[in-house]
Amino acid sequence: MGAAIAEFARAGMAEADVSAIVAAAGVAHGTFFFHFPTKEHVLLELERREEDRIAKQFAQFLKAKHDLASALNEAVRLVIGLERRLGDLLFNDFLALHFSQTRPPTEDGRDHPLVVLVAEEIAQAQERGEIDPGVSPMNSAVFFLLGLYSLLITTNHWPTGRALLEDYVARTLRSMRP
Image (cartoon, rainbow, N blue to C red):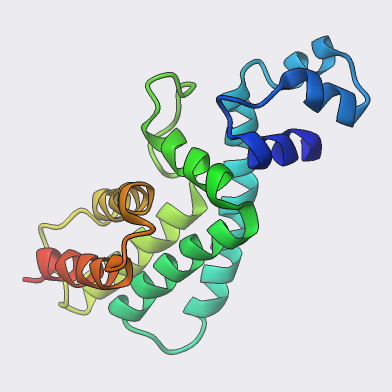
């Protein structure tokens, strides 16, 4: 996995050289493809690992006093922090995987810990009367995170990127209010 991640970070998923990956890992091509039938499967495994790590950090944040706005802003901060860990190419591939037509079949969001935690925060705000009773917390969490990923893919290096993300969080909150 480490050799694949290093190659993806160097060249991007599309241009990654499987021969370089297997040589660096010291395994046969067949062994690589046994564990990862496609290059996207490498990203899926990375997604699982990184989302677990981010969710743990987010859960730690949630232990302190906070409101929904600060929770959503913390989720944004943690996802943006992933770019520093992965680098530009791998970060964009990682986020783009969520929109790939060839992504292996997935689930409904409940096995994505960050989605679940954001949904729980929305539900708690709903119980306090801060969010419209007709809002679906799970759907809103999915909308929020997929929207964030698409903004980061398309506008990450815009000079107004930070202001755009702040506006995105504000409009997300406004869309859920009673």
